[in-house]
Image (cartoon, one colour):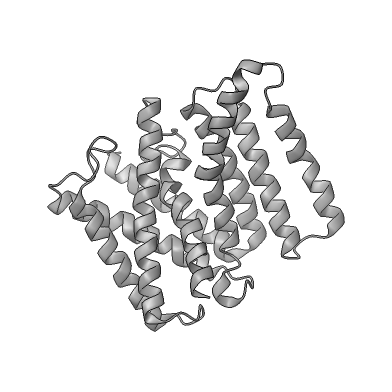
Length: 273
């Protein structure tokens, strides 16, 4: 099996799994969310010079605690379940703190802070997208799918445009293969998709300009997310964040754009609401 076929096959499986979880039921998404977040936390631990898996345990506990809090805030679980379910992530977080290694605390806090912002904030915002400001924070899976489809379209056309027309390197020190032409192509087609969504999808109560703006910010955020992960990998001296997805690398390699696009899209929704 060639690398292109392998990449296409496992990419399609990943997209199908995420799409099914998002549309089918929030609890199914929750299971997938926890699985992907845990794997990503472990991958982040490998990108930083931190001993053992303390960073992975810490980030996983933060994301789990946030998800439980979100479930409680949006009346998915009762107060009793909320308190009971918070115990495991709190225990895991305390366990991850390097109490017996004073010299590592400053380093631990530094990398922990980076991980909370990226990818932690991205996972948190993805959950919040199920309750978009545009429809007064009511539950809906549609905004999540809108953002995911925009990211997938951006990444696809950025790649195709870059391969076909790419000559000018965008940030060669961080990612030597990505081009200005590829970034422009991804941005253009994402905005075109967003404008098309205005005519075929009215549930989010946004104007044509609002949709075009959403496409623009998602495209720019996708580029930023890609480069943030590229910078982390370059500093760590690795090509991929992991090897769990054949032809793609790690989970973070597939979700790097979402980790920035999700919080940016949710904040954009707050502004436009």
